[in-house]
Length: 244
Image 1 (cartoon, rainbow, N blue to C red):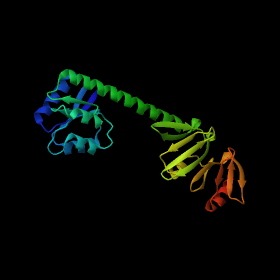
Image 2: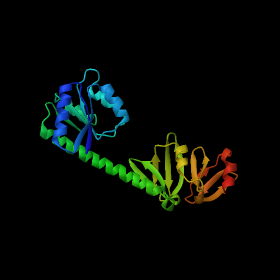
Image 3: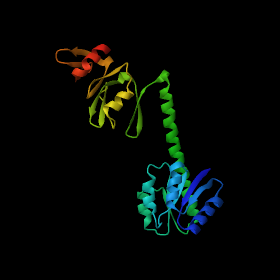
Image 4: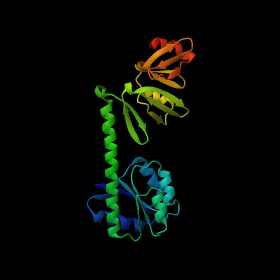
């Protein structure tokens, strides 16, 4: 059962669409409807329907301004309008579809199909992500999880050589030569790595303690098994030796 919210400043148009949706199918119901966009925003700030039908022409706040104020919405938006020229702009503003007034029943059926398809796809992706995260949280098969480029990356500690800071970004260096760039500061990366295997040896570096080949005490460097030479900061030297 799809749960919909309707926002339209014209009461007659709102009632008409509500009637259409209610009588079109038993697969969709109208949760709430609003003629005042501000009231609708307050409601949507606390509730998350399966879809939103939004009038584009409203005197106090047009539909595009409304979408911007919604922020990070997790439900598809359908634009309703009497003006065809809004169609392209609506789709560019991430609306899943648009309906021309007066709304045709067949067009509405097509839109509902798109909503169901969109929600099924996103539900599957969200559910799969949760399954993977819950699976990985189990100590029996614990891996290090990084979220990068729209995907979850699961790594064993033994696959990681070291991590390097680059301002608001960090680069993970793997034993097979791969580099993984993360939109995280090194401090955030450090929190993801197990303390028993990794140590922040310098403001700019975290190393895998199991990958150390040499410690050059005079020069203040460690050499990893990959022959990467990583500096040890003076402030970290004592704690580092304690780890060893």
